[in-house]
Image (cartoon, rainbow, N blue to C red):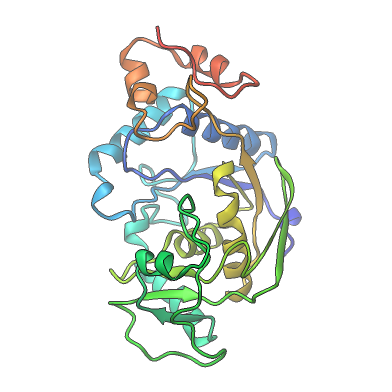
Length: 291
């Protein structure tokens, strides 16, 4: 079914690895605005697959801080809904099913390389990249299903080298990358027997019938990988809207280490949501100055 014919469904998908900051709030507020404007539904999903970094106290703070900021959703871990569970840690069976579908189709292969192995093998390493282009150390001949046990090794998705992946972003316009040049074979399952962000995100957004993914512009690179997973799994991809990032007073992108600009800290200082919304809407994309 074409995305245009479906009732709008958006989502907020924070990871509880720290307190939410103003950059998250701005992106999530845009997601809410777009859902309201479309007369659609907004859900909250708890993306808690990042091992010991995800803590129950951050989940509770996440929900409390989002509500304080004025965000509302119709389905989520705090209220349930037709696509429960809304905690990724409780959705492992869905990810296993997607993994086995990819394995059966010959789209993935086991890989024993660590990130350090990959960087050492590169003739022109790029130390700033989160996931450098994989040089094919463990890549087998194309085709065929691997019978290697799932756990204990990484599993990579084989990209078609030279293939162009494109999409039109609702905020940033036309986007395009070439597989094998701009990104390589990427992780879909980790050796600790958990899915990668890419696979979990695709499986959940499809299962929860998300029609538009609103998130930060730093995740545009992930979209190319995820589009390949949608195609391999025979799923309709949603539309994408990547928001500009919020920077601190020095022009650096906000991260969870910026606890002074977390919603929790700003709230404790007596700041109010209306004031923070005005600051975050500045064209410079800068966080409000400290009092």
